[in-house]
Image (cartoon, rainbow, N blue to C red; front, top):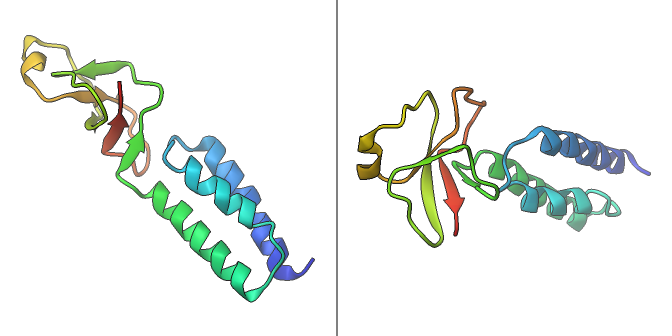
Length: 124
């Protein structure tokens, strides 16, 4: 193996570790192909493909939108149907009668992670 091949393999291992501790479900479809192409044979075209795949995976970590595949503890407001984007709020939320008049939201709790998503893609 050449040095560039070792570099891509090390990047793939590091990505697996980051993905294991990440809370972004949107990143999974981007990281899986990026990890797969990291093990290709080195070459001028494969390096371009690897670079583009990894840039897309990193950009998915910075996206303000995430996928809500399992729901969260607090779902409030006027709950809609179908595929939609729902605002994700952090902080202590006390249920009140005014929640029924507000737009739909998810309360993610008090612990704000670094670079949290602002919106969740939800479906019924």
